[in-house]
Length: 536
Length: 36
Image (cartoon, rainbow over all chains, first blue to last red; front, side):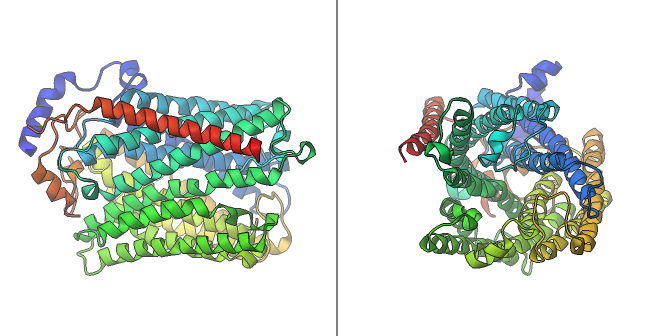
């Protein structure tokens, strides 16, 4: 089968990638090209959002106001979050999904290729609109990424622009999610049953359902903000009989599943990488699927833990505290399974494995601080402090971002057909892993000592750890420059990659040649290949 | 050999269904906020 596939690919050359730039990149319906577009877009956004983080850490290097005025500082924190979440993380995961899902399930492409193109091309326009708010008289949005009224309604000209940008990003995400679900439910090769799918496909399937359920909720909240501002409604205005706290409920009904949208595909990538470099099947495949589904379900009934301090009945606090703690159970199942996968494995430490192992340790730190925050009475102390900042950055940076980087290092030889410079990639890992801890660990201490988040200046007792944190931030920021250089040089040339790339790799994506041909699985793979890959 | 079945109808129907569901959630939340 592998041979006949290779032969077919040779035949494919004369109707391979279109030659013109417009045809190839702007009008493309090819899942690999759209995946590449998403990943490049996300990479650019990561560096733009990273530059904003550098401004934040430069200002916080010392107490007092040094570089930017407070309004601009608030714009930096708000825009950093919006750019990183909606422009970096989400498109990066959609990019990986586009590249890998058809390859992993033996499909020729995504189910809805033209909608796929539209989903992508909404994103640059949304972000041009969002970034252009910097040039309005009122400056970019500065009320926090949560867009709470009434503060957000005071945003001047930037308000409608940011709202429309959020709407466009939401539409793009919903279409992307529909595409993933329809592909996974209808396009699997004969014999690729649901419980034979690679974990990355499973986690993405559940993520896509979360997206379909919550992105319209965000869109609804944003629509109501717009009508409150421009059409005289008072959904969230107490003066007109509305309720500003209701916005917080609606926002976090979107916002908490959103957190899992950012992390579930990371679980999938880690579940792919660890077995490969442990040379063992994944421990507890089915329990991983059920744990992911449980986390997906629980993510809908924990939202108010973000707002313990707004004042809610004791029963409400108890409910949201206990449901939040319940999430530790399926997450514990996952961490146990990953550890058990490595147990007595024949481990090797190539760059994807290094990122996956550090994910395991550092994400777990973020998980534990999350448990601390879940304790309602304790949260009254932690709420809106740097402890929260430390917590969610541990989950998102050495959690989600490290999984994205690990995923790129894992599949890059499959995409480009070349191996990359392993030594440099290991440098990238060690510098990132050390600096990310220098950057975020001291923020736990600052938060517990009472430093509030989203402030450009602070009391002098917080000076030392802020300086350490800023040094870590600059180190982490500079280390990331290795990554685009490495990708660029790998795409341009290097040692030829084999089809299987890694000694212990299993799964359909490793059965096509490297680089993956422009059209793959035009004939569905045979049962033998699927069963070999499914021996997770 | 192993030619994928023509499931374009299923693909279209499930995509339309999911799109309608998303739009219903959007309108449903706004309606709920109005009535609340």
